[in-house]
Image (spheres, rainbow, N blue to C red):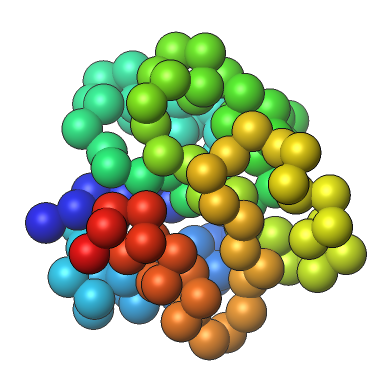
Length: 118
């Protein structure tokens, strides 16, 4: 079973993503901030993918992705955003995939499966 770390400062969105992915037989751990995500990763690196929101206070998802790349260069990273205008910029960002968040998590599930080669 794939393990995924979900990072989003909005509790309702994080819980929605967590519940949907757990229903798809993924093991999910969630973090309300980038700092908490880094703390979780320092104690447990057995995550297949980290999915992080871009817009977060303190440390945003791009900064988090950069920190993860430095410390865990083989970790798969998906950047999540609610703003579709980022889509044109995302190709230059250091992540494995980019998903525009929506209530329908089909694209996120497909992206995860593609990264895991399921």
